[in-house]
Amino acid sequence: MIAATLPAQRPPDGKLLMMDGRGQIRHWARSRFIDLLGRGDLVVANDAATLPASLTGEHLRSGQPVEVRLAGRRTLAEESIRFPTAVIFGSGDFRIRTEERPLPPPMKVRDRLRLGPLRATVDAILGHPRLVQLAFDGPVEEIWEGLARHGRPIQYSHIQTPLALWDVWTPIAGPPVAFEPPSAGFALDWSILRSFQERGIDFRTITHAAGLSSTGDAELDALLPFDEPYYIPPATALAISHAHLLGRRVVAIGTTVVRALEHAARPAGSVWSGAGLATQRIGRTSRLGVVDAMLSGTHEPGTSHYELLRAFMDDDALRRMNEELGAADYRTHEFGDSVFVERIKPSAARFEQQCPAA
Image (cartoon, rainbow, N blue to C red; front, side, top):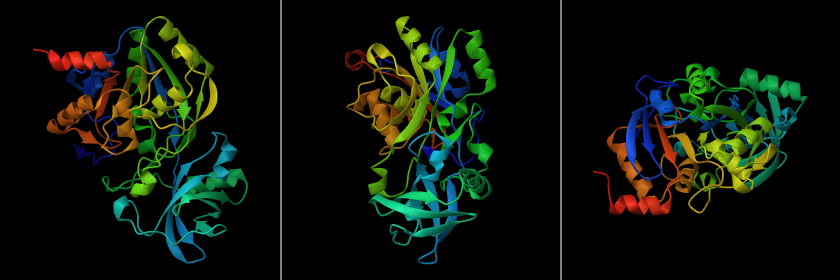
């Protein structure tokens, strides 16, 4: 796969690889995503808007420049932005690969940071020298104003031009709670949503504070995803119960939706409504109880997003999918192409290997 280098949410040549529940692979134009859905299917997307969560400034004790990337919060309440989890980088910006960024000065509890108009204190070191709990000074309203004035979207070096905030907001963006975009939702637009209604496909949303996808530090990346708060509206929870009662699929738009719905899972494929904090890591040993299929971006091996795919398919199916993605030059990262995967039943996967399609 190759990196998508332009911030185009819905490029006209967008590709989609579909792996169905029998392990069969087909290639589609991503604009035809709706043709993979059936009447009565329920599509659930994350309506979180993305914060300008990258803040440059100075570590006052050392006088050295730093970049602070906000990475977590305990709840979706506006007040929770006062005490965010953050990852600290040294000098430089997004044009340098995260793996090659200089380390920040050593952080100590009670260190002070000047981040444009904002001031913050390091309240705690969270098990890694660069992962900290911050406490911003001042009223919550001033913190939000400081983020809006000084913050920038978190960005990686595969895109060389600075991102604007609207580049990372999905068409259905609502509450500003995500630290990186729930980018699977880039594939949606209002014409698709209108087509859902025309074809009898139900559409609902949740709100999930999508976190960092990478830090460039292997030890830190092994901790991803961090705990992420979410909210499931009662209407969405009811729609999920109704879909499963009728034998219809629940289709998640992105890994954040999978994580929230599976964390809130109840017996028989239903979910609890309301607020929660997703603390689990979904992977090979996870048993999905709510989500039947997922539209996602293409992700590189080793990332938490990639590991989540193992809940949908076995390693052989994942290997075949990767080979197809590479052979067809699919683009990866947040503005890349997409995959649509259904849960593969182990017996179906073995049958396909023994009796491949002609």
